Image (cartoon, helix red, strand yellow):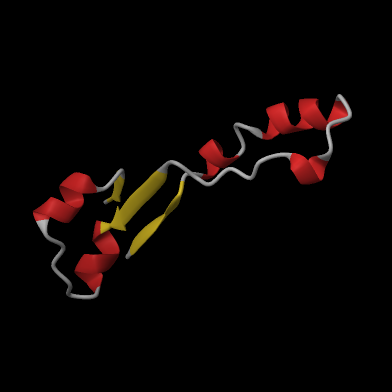
Length: 68
């Protein structure tokens, strides 16, 4: 009905930079670990209706994607 999590595409953006640093002989153990910065809220409005649940308009307005 709803999912909140990291933006998967945004997770892979720094991979090329890390690969470049490792190929230039940087120690992988010394490279910083980055935390996700972008999250997504996806709501399945159809499934909520089938379950008899009412999703508030505020939640639908804040959702990054609403599946109808």
